[in-house]
Structures are given as C-alpha cells and as structure tokens.
Image 1 (cartoon, rainbow, N blue to C red):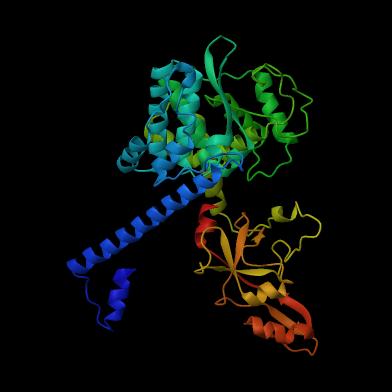
Image 2: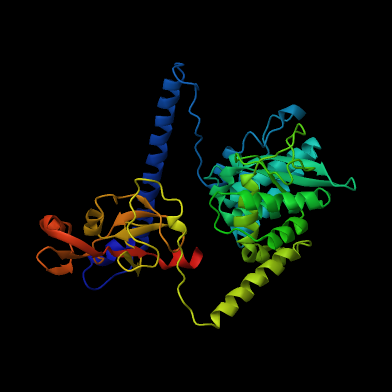
Length: 458
C-alpha cells in the first residue's frame, strides 16, 4: 500500500522506494503493531481486574490471545494436550512444530496429517492410553485443517473409542457430532484419513463392519431429513462403510428412530446403551465428506501411498467418468429447486428456479463483498421491499450455497413497468423512490454479482 502511494504521489512517472524509505516504512509498521499489542495487553489487564471482582461466572477472561495458527491451535486444545490423570500437568508443546511443518510441507493438509500422528505418538509415549492418544492427535490435526478458528475440533468430535471387531481385533470408532458441519466436507473426510494414519502408527486393525452395521447406515440415510449437499444411493453407502478403515460413528441427533435395525452391535453409547435414533454426524461425514470430496481425498491417499483407501479412488473415478460423459453431450442448464424446499412462512421469494424475472447473474467481485457474498444494486434492495439489507443472508439456486447481500451501484438495477406505460431500468436509489408510487410491476430484479470462484469451488 505504501509503495503504491509513493508511486502515485510522484506524478505520472513512478519512482522506486529507496532503501532508507523501506527501512523507515518497516519501522512505522513495527511501531504500529507494537502499539496494537500494548493496547490489547492493557485491555486484557483491565478486563481481568473487572472479572476478579467476582460479578461474572468466571474470574478471568476466557478467550486466550494468539499470534498465529500454531499459537491458536495450542491454546484452543490446551485441555486435551495435558494428561493430569497420568501425572502430566504440562501440555505437549505443539506450536513450534506446527510452524515448522507449515513451512516445510506443500499444503496445510500435509502439515495437519504429520502433526496429528506426531502428537498421538507423543501422548502414547507419555500415557500408554491408545484412546486418549488418538483423540488428542485427531483434534490437533482438525485444528490445523480449520486454522483453529472453528468449533469443530472441540465440539465436532464427541468421543474416540477403541472397539472390537467380530474376530476380536481392535479398531477405531469416532463419534462425529453436528458441529463438524462447520469444518466443511474436505476437513470432515480428512479427519477420517488422519484417524487412519494414527491408527496405523499405533498398530490397530481396520474396521470390519457386520451386515447389520452396514444396513443401519443405509436406513439412516433413507430416514434423514436434514440438509445434505449430496445424498449417496444405497450402493455407494455400502461401498464406503465396508471399505473405510475407520468406523464413522456419531451421537443421536434426530427424533426419528430406526425401525429396521434399531439395536446394532458397536452402534452404542459408552455405557453400551443402543443408539436407536439417527446419527446426524454420520450422515454429514459420509455424505458431504467421503462421498462428495472423494477426488480431493484421493490426492492425499495416492501421494502418501496409504493402503486400504482404494475405494476412494474408485469412487472419485466414477465421478470423473460421469463428468466426462456429460461433457460429450449437449449441455443444458438444469433447474435446481433445492433453495425452495425449506421455505419458512413469511420469508419472501424473489424468483422461481430457472425462471425469467428473478436476478440475472453477473460474474465479478465488488469491493464490499468477499467470500460467499453477492453484490446487489441498491435500487434492487429497495425494490425487494427492503427485505434485502447489508449482510442479509439469501438462499440462491446457484452455485448452491447461501450468500450475504452487499450493495454495489456498478450493477444494473431492476427493470420496471409504470402505470403510465413507461418502461425502463432503475439505476439509482433516488430514482426508485421517485417512481415507487407509480409502479405497476417489476420485470426483473436486476443483476446479482457473484465471484466465479464460488462456482468453481462449490
């Protein structure tokens, strides 16, 4: 930013910044950062003094300060990195190791896998507790994947258990909970891969499901009424459940009970009470994780040469073949009405699926948007009855996820017909207010600006 200012201030001919200027500017940036740190520290001291008076539930400020991803991960998982029941009050230090791995590895995913295995081995050397070691390593890996800014490493994993196959061998079962949704499909699937890497390091066997266990997952998918980006058919569910080396388990989240396979071995609470209701975490991890993100997981399993994950390659190749076969045919935009299915009474609908008169798509990114946000002309916001305000979340047909609304006056506004018979496009909020009382109908809502990356990624 400073370099651009110097160039612009020099007139039409830009000049490079001298070493003296660079040094001075760096000193100003360092001084500014130091000032922010000092002020933040003084505010924390003041807040702790107020908390110490005992008027709040806690006598200290709960939110720890962190300087980067590694520091956040260490402080987020502090309670899991200690083992007081085994006499270890000091946490396993992970911040420096994470920083080193992030520099050495090509991607954050690789760093997360290596860090998870390393922490699990360290915890096992300390305690000898296989279950706690897997739990700690998995949470550390998930924290690195999600940049330690989401609740998924804490609340997305309920419990990690070591259970027995029919032949007596031990395998790993992970209870996934609803908050794992926040991590996204890729992190959900990678959590299973990380658990498998830890399992191998600790010499446990793979999961061998029985027929009732496979059929139970099929039944749950059939009964599940929650929103899933992808709902796999029974044959795909069977392929993944049978081949996955980790048992994708979960806590009961829905009121609906399974009638066909209510009491199944291994689908139980820690006290061996059977879980009869639908497990939402299982639906998310298998549907939106392992199924939907198979191609991304395949890259890691092939690069790391992980045995036992051939099913992911098979599934990813199926998806690729389907995409290739569609590419040879004449392309026709299919109507997607998913955003209309869960309409709540009282919520406005601004356009029907794939129908003229709604918003018109325009690729781009206004300065005010950012990720998963869409630009709308201010006149269109008024024309929609002022339901659309800055930051309003709107469900849209494509690319398939909701967007936050932000104003952008560079777009085309709504096209309207007045009672006098005049027809035209409104290009300012002031113009809309002048003709609002004369409005007969809105022919189209104007343009909706969405970044191309939202379509490419989603």
